[in-house]
Amino acid sequence: MLCCFALSLVACATVPHTGRKQLNFVSDKQLNSIGAKAYSEILKREPVSENKTLNETVKRVADRIGKVADETDKPGFEWDVRLIDQDIPNAFCLPGGKIIVYKGILPYAKTEAGLAAIIGHEVAHAVARHGAERLSQQMALQGVGAVGSEIFKSTDGKLDEKTRAIIGALGFGATIGVILPYSRTHEFEADRIGQTYMASAGYEPEEAVKLWSRMSAIKKPPIPPWLSTHPADQDRVNKLIESSPDAQKKYQEVRDKIGLGVQLDVLMDQSDRQ
Image (cartoon, rainbow, N blue to C red; front, side):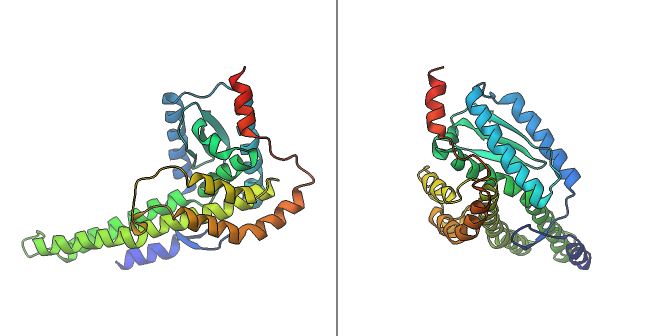
Protein backbone atom coordinates (compact mmCIF):
# COMPACT_ATOMS: atom_id res chain seq x y z
CA MET A 1 0.00 0.00 0.00
CA LEU A 2 2.85 2.36 0.85
CA CYS A 3 4.38 1.52 -2.52
CA CYS A 4 1.14 2.49 -4.30
CA PHE A 5 0.99 5.74 -2.34
CA ALA A 6 4.61 6.59 -3.17
CA LEU A 7 4.03 5.79 -6.83
CA SER A 8 0.98 8.06 -6.90
CA LEU A 9 3.08 10.93 -5.59
CA VAL A 10 5.62 10.69 -8.40
CA ALA A 11 2.96 10.05 -11.04
CA CYS A 12 1.14 13.35 -10.65
CA ALA A 13 0.74 15.58 -13.70
CA THR A 14 -1.09 18.86 -14.26
CA VAL A 15 -3.88 19.43 -16.77
CA PRO A 16 -3.18 22.46 -18.99
CA HIS A 17 -5.49 25.48 -18.63
CA THR A 18 -7.32 24.10 -15.57
CA GLY A 19 -4.33 23.32 -13.34
CA ARG A 20 -5.99 20.18 -11.96
CA LYS A 21 -3.61 17.50 -10.68
CA GLN A 22 -4.03 14.13 -12.34
CA LEU A 23 -2.69 10.62 -11.81
CA ASN A 24 -0.65 9.35 -14.74
CA PHE A 25 1.45 6.19 -14.78
CA VAL A 26 1.50 5.94 -18.60
CA SER A 27 4.22 7.54 -20.72
CA ASP A 28 3.37 9.60 -23.80
CA LYS A 29 5.40 7.15 -25.88
CA GLN A 30 3.26 4.23 -24.72
CA LEU A 31 0.01 6.11 -25.18
CA ASN A 32 0.89 7.52 -28.60
CA SER A 33 1.86 4.06 -29.80
CA ILE A 34 -1.55 2.77 -28.75
CA GLY A 35 -3.20 5.71 -30.54
CA ALA A 36 -1.26 5.15 -33.77
CA LYS A 37 -2.15 1.47 -33.83
CA ALA A 38 -5.83 2.15 -33.18
CA TYR A 39 -5.87 4.83 -35.91
CA SER A 40 -4.38 2.43 -38.43
CA GLU A 41 -6.95 -0.23 -37.59
CA ILE A 42 -9.85 2.22 -37.86
CA LEU A 43 -8.73 3.39 -41.30
CA LYS A 44 -8.51 -0.21 -42.49
CA ARG A 45 -12.11 -1.04 -41.59
CA GLU A 46 -13.95 2.28 -41.97
CA PRO A 47 -14.82 3.97 -45.32
CA VAL A 48 -12.88 7.23 -45.63
CA SER A 49 -14.86 10.00 -47.33
CA GLU A 50 -13.78 10.99 -50.84
CA ASN A 51 -15.74 14.26 -50.77
CA LYS A 52 -13.09 16.85 -51.58
CA THR A 53 -15.02 19.85 -50.26
CA LEU A 54 -15.83 18.33 -46.91
CA ASN A 55 -12.34 16.86 -46.51
CA GLU A 56 -10.80 20.26 -47.12
CA THR A 57 -13.07 21.86 -44.52
CA VAL A 58 -12.41 19.19 -41.90
CA LYS A 59 -8.66 19.39 -42.51
CA ARG A 60 -8.67 23.19 -42.33
CA VAL A 61 -10.44 23.18 -38.98
CA ALA A 62 -8.22 20.41 -37.57
CA ASP A 63 -5.08 22.21 -38.75
CA ARG A 64 -6.12 25.46 -37.07
CA ILE A 65 -7.05 23.76 -33.81
CA GLY A 66 -3.87 21.66 -33.86
CA LYS A 67 -1.72 24.73 -34.47
CA VAL A 68 -3.23 26.50 -31.44
CA ALA A 69 -2.70 23.42 -29.26
CA ASP A 70 0.93 23.24 -30.42
CA GLU A 71 1.54 26.92 -29.68
CA THR A 72 -0.10 26.96 -26.25
CA ASP A 73 0.50 23.48 -24.81
CA LYS A 74 3.18 21.87 -27.01
CA PRO A 75 1.84 18.29 -26.83
CA GLY A 76 4.38 17.04 -29.39
CA PHE A 77 1.70 15.31 -31.47
CA GLU A 78 1.82 14.44 -35.17
CA TRP A 79 -1.61 15.66 -36.23
CA ASP A 80 -3.67 13.83 -38.82
CA VAL A 81 -7.41 13.80 -39.51
CA ARG A 82 -9.78 11.64 -41.52
CA LEU A 83 -13.45 12.11 -42.36
CA ILE A 84 -15.28 8.79 -42.20
CA ASP A 85 -18.22 8.31 -44.57
CA GLN A 86 -20.59 6.92 -41.96
CA ASP A 87 -23.84 8.44 -40.73
CA ILE A 88 -22.72 8.36 -37.09
CA PRO A 89 -22.79 11.49 -34.90
CA ASN A 90 -19.31 11.00 -33.46
CA ALA A 91 -15.73 12.28 -33.49
CA PHE A 92 -12.66 11.62 -31.36
CA CYS A 93 -8.95 12.34 -31.12
CA LEU A 94 -6.66 9.43 -30.32
CA PRO A 95 -3.47 9.86 -28.27
CA GLY A 96 -0.76 11.36 -30.43
CA GLY A 97 -3.11 13.63 -32.38
CA LYS A 98 -4.94 11.24 -34.71
CA ILE A 99 -8.43 12.68 -35.29
CA ILE A 100 -11.48 10.83 -36.60
CA VAL A 101 -14.61 12.73 -37.66
CA TYR A 102 -17.72 10.86 -38.78
CA LYS A 103 -19.83 12.47 -41.49
CA GLY A 104 -22.93 11.97 -39.35
CA ILE A 105 -21.82 14.66 -36.91
CA LEU A 106 -21.66 17.42 -39.55
CA PRO A 107 -25.41 18.21 -39.46
CA TYR A 108 -25.00 18.94 -35.75
CA ALA A 109 -21.91 21.07 -36.39
CA LYS A 110 -23.78 23.08 -39.06
CA THR A 111 -20.98 25.64 -39.39
CA GLU A 112 -17.22 25.53 -39.56
CA ALA A 113 -17.20 27.09 -36.08
CA GLY A 114 -19.47 24.29 -34.85
CA LEU A 115 -17.04 21.75 -36.25
CA ALA A 116 -14.21 23.65 -34.52
CA ALA A 117 -16.06 23.20 -31.21
CA ILE A 118 -16.26 19.44 -31.83
CA ILE A 119 -12.65 19.01 -32.90
CA GLY A 120 -11.44 21.40 -30.19
CA HIS A 121 -13.21 19.30 -27.57
CA GLU A 122 -11.70 16.05 -28.84
CA VAL A 123 -8.21 17.50 -29.21
CA ALA A 124 -8.50 18.82 -25.64
CA HIS A 125 -9.10 15.27 -24.37
CA ALA A 126 -5.87 14.13 -26.02
CA VAL A 127 -3.75 17.13 -24.97
CA ALA A 128 -5.01 16.83 -21.37
CA ARG A 129 -4.00 13.13 -21.39
CA HIS A 130 -7.43 12.09 -20.17
CA GLY A 131 -6.98 8.63 -21.66
CA ALA A 132 -3.77 8.09 -19.73
CA GLU A 133 -5.40 9.33 -16.53
CA ARG A 134 -8.34 6.94 -16.82
CA LEU A 135 -6.01 4.05 -17.62
CA SER A 136 -3.85 5.00 -14.61
CA GLN A 137 -6.91 5.08 -12.36
CA GLN A 138 -7.86 1.59 -13.50
CA MET A 139 -4.30 0.38 -12.86
CA ALA A 140 -4.31 1.94 -9.38
CA LEU A 141 -7.70 0.44 -8.50
CA GLN A 142 -6.61 -2.98 -9.70
CA GLY A 143 -3.52 -2.67 -7.55
CA VAL A 144 -5.58 -1.76 -4.48
CA GLY A 145 -7.91 -4.67 -5.18
CA ALA A 146 -4.98 -7.07 -5.36
CA VAL A 147 -3.59 -5.80 -2.06
CA GLY A 148 -7.04 -6.05 -0.47
CA SER A 149 -7.37 -9.63 -1.63
CA GLU A 150 -4.08 -10.55 0.04
CA ILE A 151 -5.03 -8.81 3.29
CA PHE A 152 -8.47 -10.42 3.55
CA LYS A 153 -7.47 -13.95 2.59
CA SER A 154 -8.45 -16.58 5.13
CA THR A 155 -5.86 -18.91 6.68
CA ASP A 156 -6.36 -21.45 3.91
CA GLY A 157 -5.46 -18.80 1.32
CA LYS A 158 -9.01 -18.42 -0.05
CA LEU A 159 -11.53 -15.58 0.12
CA ASP A 160 -14.74 -16.28 2.01
CA GLU A 161 -18.08 -15.04 0.69
CA LYS A 162 -18.24 -12.05 3.06
CA THR A 163 -14.79 -10.87 2.00
CA ARG A 164 -15.65 -11.29 -1.69
CA ALA A 165 -18.73 -9.14 -1.15
CA ILE A 166 -16.66 -6.43 0.58
CA ILE A 167 -14.06 -6.33 -2.20
CA GLY A 168 -16.80 -6.33 -4.85
CA ALA A 169 -18.53 -3.43 -3.12
CA LEU A 170 -15.23 -1.54 -2.89
CA GLY A 171 -14.70 -2.05 -6.61
CA PHE A 172 -18.20 -0.83 -7.44
CA GLY A 173 -17.83 2.11 -5.07
CA ALA A 174 -14.54 3.05 -6.72
CA THR A 175 -16.22 3.03 -10.12
CA ILE A 176 -19.13 5.17 -8.94
CA GLY A 177 -17.04 7.37 -6.69
CA VAL A 178 -13.87 7.77 -8.77
CA ILE A 179 -13.98 6.62 -12.38
CA LEU A 180 -17.38 8.04 -13.39
CA PRO A 181 -16.98 11.43 -11.67
CA TYR A 182 -13.54 11.79 -13.23
CA SER A 183 -15.01 10.92 -16.59
CA ARG A 184 -17.52 13.74 -16.16
CA THR A 185 -14.70 16.04 -15.02
CA HIS A 186 -12.84 15.17 -18.21
CA GLU A 187 -15.83 16.17 -20.32
CA PHE A 188 -16.14 19.54 -18.59
CA GLU A 189 -12.39 20.13 -19.00
CA ALA A 190 -12.48 19.19 -22.68
CA ASP A 191 -15.43 21.53 -23.22
CA ARG A 192 -13.60 24.42 -21.58
CA ILE A 193 -10.19 23.79 -23.18
CA GLY A 194 -11.80 23.09 -26.55
CA GLN A 195 -13.70 26.36 -26.41
CA THR A 196 -10.41 28.16 -25.69
CA TYR A 197 -8.75 26.40 -28.63
CA MET A 198 -11.52 27.31 -31.08
CA ALA A 199 -11.54 30.93 -29.93
CA SER A 200 -7.76 31.17 -30.30
CA ALA A 201 -8.09 29.65 -33.78
CA GLY A 202 -10.50 32.43 -34.79
CA TYR A 203 -13.85 30.70 -34.32
CA GLU A 204 -16.74 32.31 -32.44
CA PRO A 205 -16.75 30.55 -29.02
CA GLU A 206 -20.50 31.06 -28.57
CA GLU A 207 -20.89 28.41 -31.26
CA ALA A 208 -19.77 25.83 -28.67
CA VAL A 209 -22.84 26.66 -26.59
CA LYS A 210 -25.09 26.32 -29.63
CA LEU A 211 -23.40 23.07 -30.65
CA TRP A 212 -23.97 21.31 -27.34
CA SER A 213 -27.55 22.53 -27.29
CA ARG A 214 -28.01 20.83 -30.68
CA MET A 215 -26.15 17.72 -29.51
CA SER A 216 -28.65 17.36 -26.67
CA ALA A 217 -31.20 16.42 -29.33
CA ILE A 218 -29.37 13.14 -29.98
CA LYS A 219 -31.43 10.41 -28.34
CA LYS A 220 -29.57 8.72 -25.51
CA PRO A 221 -30.62 5.79 -23.33
CA PRO A 222 -32.04 6.93 -19.97
CA ILE A 223 -29.20 6.71 -17.42
CA PRO A 224 -29.25 8.10 -13.86
CA PRO A 225 -26.85 11.09 -13.66
CA TRP A 226 -24.73 9.35 -11.01
CA LEU A 227 -24.14 6.40 -13.37
CA SER A 228 -23.43 8.47 -16.48
CA THR A 229 -19.94 8.92 -17.92
CA HIS A 230 -21.00 12.28 -19.40
CA PRO A 231 -22.46 15.34 -17.68
CA ALA A 232 -26.07 16.28 -18.29
CA ASP A 233 -26.43 18.27 -21.51
CA GLN A 234 -27.76 21.38 -19.78
CA ASP A 235 -24.91 21.27 -17.25
CA ARG A 236 -22.43 21.33 -20.14
CA VAL A 237 -24.20 24.24 -21.77
CA ASN A 238 -24.25 26.16 -18.49
CA LYS A 239 -20.51 25.59 -17.93
CA LEU A 240 -19.74 26.76 -21.46
CA ILE A 241 -21.79 29.89 -20.92
CA GLU A 242 -19.72 30.55 -17.78
CA SER A 243 -16.42 30.18 -19.64
CA SER A 244 -17.55 32.10 -22.73
CA PRO A 245 -16.38 35.58 -21.59
CA ASP A 246 -12.74 34.44 -21.27
CA ALA A 247 -12.92 32.63 -24.60
CA GLN A 248 -14.54 35.67 -26.17
CA LYS A 249 -11.52 37.79 -25.20
CA LYS A 250 -9.20 35.41 -27.04
CA TYR A 251 -11.52 35.41 -30.03
CA GLN A 252 -11.55 39.21 -30.21
CA GLU A 253 -7.74 39.19 -30.31
CA VAL A 254 -7.58 37.05 -33.43
CA ARG A 255 -10.88 37.61 -35.29
CA ASP A 256 -9.46 40.28 -37.58
CA LYS A 257 -6.51 38.08 -38.58
CA ILE A 258 -8.28 34.87 -39.64
CA GLY A 259 -11.18 34.18 -42.01
CA LEU A 260 -14.21 32.74 -40.25
CA GLY A 261 -16.96 30.12 -40.57
CA VAL A 262 -18.22 28.48 -43.72
CA GLN A 263 -21.63 26.79 -43.50
CA LEU A 264 -21.11 23.04 -43.46
CA ASP A 265 -24.76 22.38 -44.31
CA VAL A 266 -24.34 24.45 -47.51
CA LEU A 267 -21.14 22.59 -48.37
CA MET A 268 -22.94 19.29 -47.90
CA ASP A 269 -25.74 20.45 -50.20
CA GLN A 270 -23.18 21.42 -52.84
CA SER A 271 -21.41 18.07 -52.52
CA ASP A 272 -24.69 16.25 -53.14
CA ARG A 273 -24.96 18.01 -56.51
CA GLN A 274 -21.41 17.14 -57.58
